[in-house]
Every structure is written in structure tokens, then in C-alpha cells.
Figure (cartoon, rainbow, N blue to C red):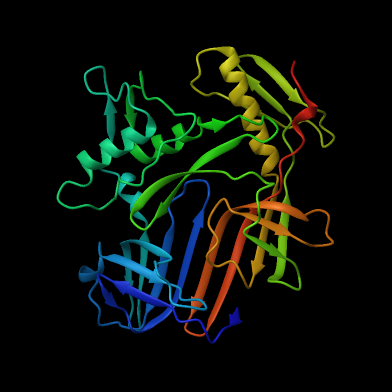
Length: 337
């Protein structure tokens, strides 16, 4: 934890500041998981029933006053004790994951002709924003290529369906670096974000003399082989031994399934090195942003995408961990069988 006199966090609950904030933690990740925020408040007299479901906004105010909250969401868990009370809140995507929320698609009721963006707008308007606007649909953007829901039938959790379908929208303009989309939030708005190219201008450059406090990483076995529809293809050679994935998918034709299995291999190769950076800068960096590591360690040097962010703080201290992915492999070694 680092000390910083210019750091002044503020927590608003239903528009009223919680003056006795003891500590807070915020975490978010690029895999479209819901962002969560927890806080401990030195106010044991607060009633659990008055907090549950309330809207919270957390302002980090690191270096200057924030114009927008770092986190905005709704309290879903309350844990009172004799000395304090702990709250846990999730962003607005949590309204799409509640157990009572089930989407039943049939021949009579379906979203044929809708793409993922128009489906999400329609579903939220008709099923969530009934009495008041909980999720702002105006910022839900389109994707290229779009994903169509025509012919989709069955029972689904709305947000799990969104996460499944968004994986099918991949920009293959440069086959050497396919760019996928992920779901993120801005305030109470849901947006679709396309991954940035690794040769994009970095949002920050880190070194041991500029913000990088420490780092740690785990290396997992690389998977070079994909099995699909009783077929197989191999990417290059497998010096670490035989590791493979079994791709199921919903694609009808072998060529489509092969392409999606290939892209799954690419993603596996991207994520074999789990790298976590502890830094003193970058608190406001967004998911998917490019971080350049200027270090003598060749295992981690170069451009990376931010895939997760975690901030822990108290009244007088703050720490930041960034999870990043190593750059893509050279796909020119790709061989089909």
C-alpha cells in the first residue's frame, strides 16, 4: 500500500455521502464479468434493510476531483457487525443475471431479425426499465461484424447469452491479430468494446523508475491442438507436449466450426502467461487499454492489454493491481490438418 496525501475517496449511498468510510475495494475484468465493489463503513447503527438495493457511487479522487464515479452500481449484500457494516455492490449488469430472470425463446416469441445490440436494448426496456430507468440503453452500440439472434431457441439467462454471443463478433481484418469484443459499463450504461491493437499508442508506459512497483506471473501449458466434429488442426508444433482443447460450439458447418476453434486456440495462446502488475499509476486506465512495459525481463517486456483491474484503499493508503495479457503469437506458423 502506498501513501498519498492527494487521495480523498468518497462513497455516496442513494445520494448521501458515507462519511465514516473505513476501506473499499473495486475490481473489474475484461471477460465481461460483472464489476464489484465492497466497502466497510464505521456506522454500525445503519440498518441493513435501508441499504439493500440502494444505488452507490464511488469516487476515487486520486490527484484531483473525479468528474465521474469510478464505480456505480447497486448494493446486493449487507453484512452488519457490532463495530461496522460491510456492503457489496455490483454494476448494472447484475439486473441481467438475477435468478428470476429467464429468457424463453420459442417459435412464437423470439428475437429473429435482431442483432445483439438491438436485442439487449429491447430486453432491458421491456423487462428491467419498467418503473424507472435502471440501465441506460442509449449507449449500447453496434459491433462489426454484428451477431444475429435469428433461429435462436431455448431457455437462457440474458447476460450469459450476451457473453456467449459477443464471442462470435471478431474483427478478422488482420488475421495475425483478430480483435474480439467484450462487455463493459460506463456509469449505468452498458457498452460493447472492441479490443485495441497491440501496436496502438499505449495509455501508459511502465518501468521500475516510472510506476512499476512489482510484478508476478504464472506460466500455463500452451494448447496447440483443437478437436472439432471428429477433426483436428494443429497450430505449429507443441514443444511442451500434447495439450489440446475440445471445441463444441453451435456452428452448423465444418468450416465455420474450424474457424471458431482456431480463434479459441489463438485466445488460449494469448492467456498462457498470467501477469499481474502492482503499480503506483494507472488507476483510471480502462479495460482493453494498452500498457507498455519497459523492463529488462524479456518474458514480460513490450505491449500488453489490460484485462483486469483491482483497487484497494483506506483513508490514507491505496494499492493498484493490473492484470495484463502478453502480446499475440505470430500466426504465420498456423498449420491445418
